[in-house]
Length: 136
Image (cartoon, rainbow, N blue to C red; front, top):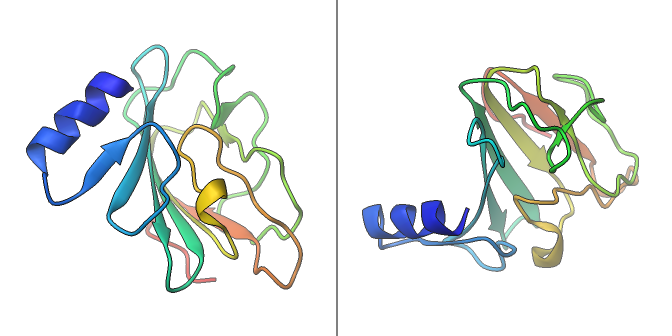
C-alpha cells in the first residue's frame, strides 16, 4: 500500500496519498489488498463530515482477513445502514467498483484500511452502491 500511495502521489501531486486516515480535504487514504486484487481510496469531507470511499476489485480479492474485504458483508448494496459498525466489510466476491458514503464521520474514522460507521440515525449511517456514489 505504501508503494502504491507513493505512485499515486507522483501521478497527482496536488493531492496527498498515504496509508493513514484521510484527515483533511485533499488527503486520500489508500490500501491495497494483500494479494493485490483490490484497492480502497477514502477521502474525508470536512464541510459535510462525510467519508467517501471507492473500492475497486477488478478481480475478487482472495484474502478476506484484511478490511474492508470480509467473508460476510456488513450491509447490502443500496440499503442505508445506521448501526454503529466497528469495521465495514464488503464482500470479496463483489467484483468491479463500489462507491460508499459514510455520514457523520470524523477524520479519525475515515480510513481506507478500517472503514467504520459512527452509527445512529442522527449520523445518517452509511450506504454503498455499484452504480455511483449514494446520496444519503
